[in-house]
Length: 558
Image (cartoon, rainbow, N blue to C red; front, side, top):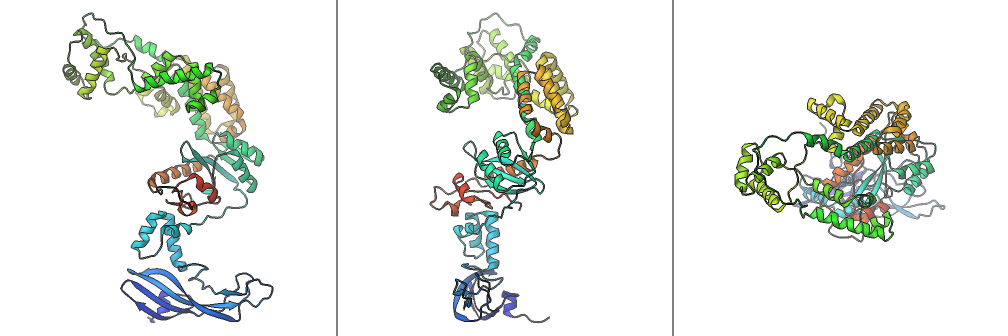
């Protein structure tokens, strides 16, 4: 095997000559001279003929073992002899080793960029110290450059929002649905911003989106010829919300047959009058009373729903509910929101034993009795219930009826996936309430349209829902009619926003992984510190920095 020179080991294929190597305890200094052909002028690209001067520049190279490597490279400055060129002199750049204004070699710069992409600022700086590479947090962040964005939009474009900070600031992610990669990120979720992007990048033929109206408005303004495709998952989600609202509105229909069922036999109690039941003075009960009072006070003054929502910092739907619902019903709903816990199945027995003993039974005795009957809770829970019975604030025994969310899950799932007990309980619910039965039939019919992409039957389904369906289902059908073309395309074409939702989920995962890595306070140079997480920035980064403090996202495939 032929012996290799120092140049072949340190600079393979690069036009330099090593003159001297100085070895110290922790640093290896390599003195080298450029031996390549005269360079090209960076402006006019004419090859130089005359040498102006030479000077020595220091470059950090990739470490060798446990020692840092510093290259002291002597390079030449040339004259540019073309009179039409504005540049008079320039310094040669050695391919594979140097770049303009760079303090490290090309190979080391590639290392640092990869480390910064994977780890961010401070974690990458800590790793560089362990690798014997001189690179600080700010220098690493400056290596992160935005990938280019095509002048024309992709044929199939997916769009969705994501949260910089949930409830405060949102952005928009644009995805190439066919390739499954992120194209660009916008600093907000407004229709004006998305419309401006579509105007600058024409060519989108199909745009997959959710049910957000802002994106619809932007598409109609900037890309009227593009075909909008509503996402099928969001359609099922909206349908599920309508079914759950129907089940919640008709919950009383389920309570009546459940309350008529016989209670398990207990020892015959001695006649005793319990204290007059009162609502417990919990925080949620008091908050409901005060909120109802505030809303109605502002309504009497003539305030609008939007103004009340801004004044009380509430959602407009919440304001409407407190305006249109009786206080007793709101208080009952607030009381029912308390969790059942392990005590609920034994509440009837505890109440019966309390009346039988004229209230003279101890909490320890009741705890031992219900424990023999399968109770797995603590003694303190039984004592609190006994104290509530004596004070008259105990909740009544609730009928064992499924929650609206559980009923909705039974309706939305395919029938073959339900167990025998679940199918039986759903049948009981359907027999108890005809409105829930109608909602169940319509929901299953629409789910069949979605799963088998039978968009040609959508209009007939909307007509049936608008005729005799419960009010929430009619509202859902009306929203489909307003967005009929996009929904029909979603139930016909194979495209959807599933790839976009996957990238949004990846954003959430990166945000959770980067928790706590933000700097403690504002920075006067946010462009240098915004990438304090695993990131790869995108175009329009400078406008997006104001929405993030100390972190960003790495959205490209890696």
